[in-house]
Image (cartoon, rainbow, N blue to C red; front, side):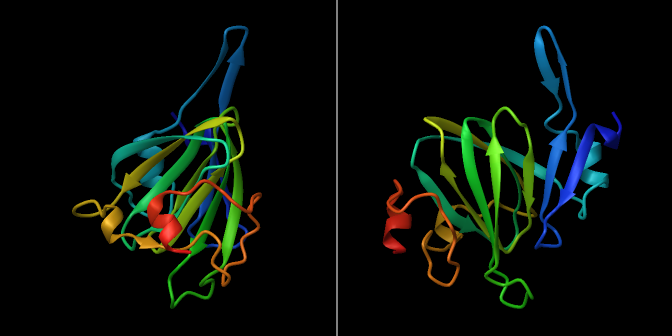
Amino acid sequence: MSYKDFEIIPSKIFEDVVQIKPSVFEDLRGNIYTSFNKDFYTNALPKQLDFKHDKFAESRREVLRGLHGDTKTWKLVSCVYGEIMEVVVDMREDSPTYLKWEAFELKGNEYSQVLIPPGFVNGYYVKSEKAVFHYKLAYDGDYIDADEQITVAWDDERLNINWPCTNPILQERDILMR
């Protein structure tokens, strides 16, 4: 497999955030594409990443998950079913892009991924009836779970994110951030 099987689209705002689109082969049966190739992700991207585990989240329309992150985990995120608005926010206080955000429209039938570096939070809003969100995680040491993560309110006034909703369905820790 060559790197031409993936297109890397740099963020318009952040140096280490990239969108990755795989080549898709289609014929009368349907299609096939590669979602992960260790050589590509180890050698073609900005850092030597060691992906350790995957997570999937299934959510219904109007669910907003996030904004969550930590200071050591790289996340490779995608929507494998449905449609979401994915948002990444730079929470690195010493960064020139501190508190800036960028949104990506991710659709299960478009197969693209977003690579998010440590020090960023991310969240997504489900626009379709149902969506399945996938994240592949790379980090050193042990995984930082929810109780150790950075959590920022989805409607934090400092960010002024243009979410397509005013009253999303939230989990308890996100409601408490308001």
